[in-house]
Amino acid sequence: MMGCVFCRIVAKETPAYIVYEDDKTLGFLDHLPIHRGHTLVILKDHYESLLDIPAEGLKDLILTTQKVGAGVIKAMGAEGFNLVMNNGRSAGQEVPHAHFHILPRFRGDGLRIGFPRNRYPEEEMRKIQEAIKKGLS
Image (cartoon, rainbow, N blue to C red; front, side):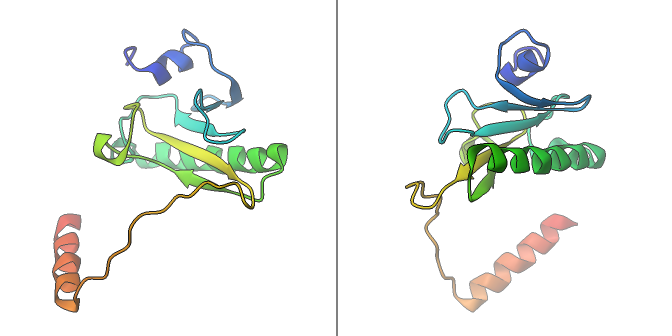
């Protein structure tokens, strides 16, 4: 999909700092990084979200993400990393091409990735449980 900035990066029409490439996947530095080494990993084929990717593509994507994640940790001297994937605009997805963010982490780096947590009554938990089970069928 050539209106997609990531597809233009794949086609080498838009420059990017590519750190990894094979026949199916691409890893490149985020142009507005949260930390030094913040890297994106994509499939070269265009899929809008995780839910659109076929099983074989998921395998390729996660294996490349594992490889690139290890490289980011080693290169940046990071102690770990967060793996983030936003699916849909309401979840913060800015580019409609499925991608993982590898965010290298360092003790005391000040980055807080957290969400408000809630407790629900047991009855509500059961209702949610059943609704999700129905959604899976």
